[in-house]
Image (cartoon, rainbow, N blue to C red; front, top):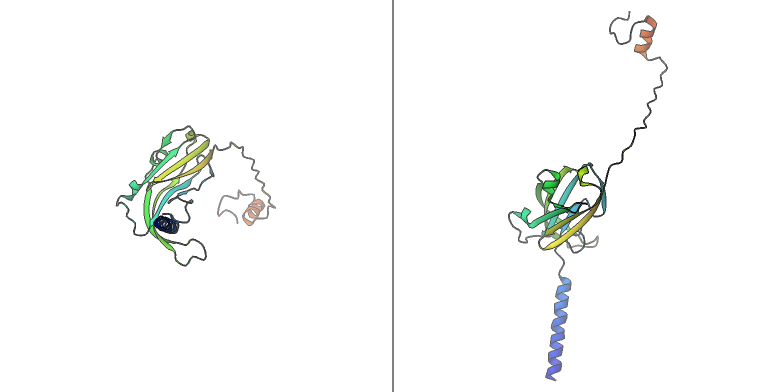
Length: 197
């Protein structure tokens, strides 16, 4: 009888522990990939062309009032793996320092969610950057490590196509534009001002 009470108590504790674990939500903003705490822009599976200007951003979302280092930039490690296999930092690839900003957001799980979660957001943004042609074409993998969570996105880089211009300019005129018409009647060149009498 004591054994059955002990088994019931263990089963009850296990059920309570499972219920508590199920109620804990992951440390993430609902715009991030499932199970991740960082959003990377451009988003996963984007195709980019060399020499095309874009903004590259990594945003870390942590629950409101969570402990974050004062130097929060060090909590976000960003590595970019190029098509040739080399790993580079964004600063080295893009040749500029990022802009850093912070803000607070309220995240709703869905349209019926009446109790939004508060998040502190920390973003690192490289504005107006390009993948140079020296990168080559192929897959680029961005790996973000933030607060012990790894997020990866993949881009496909393509080379610009060489195209010949096929523009045709067609000018249609009926010679009745007033300055030209007056010049035609007097025989003077139309670009000499003040000589038409």
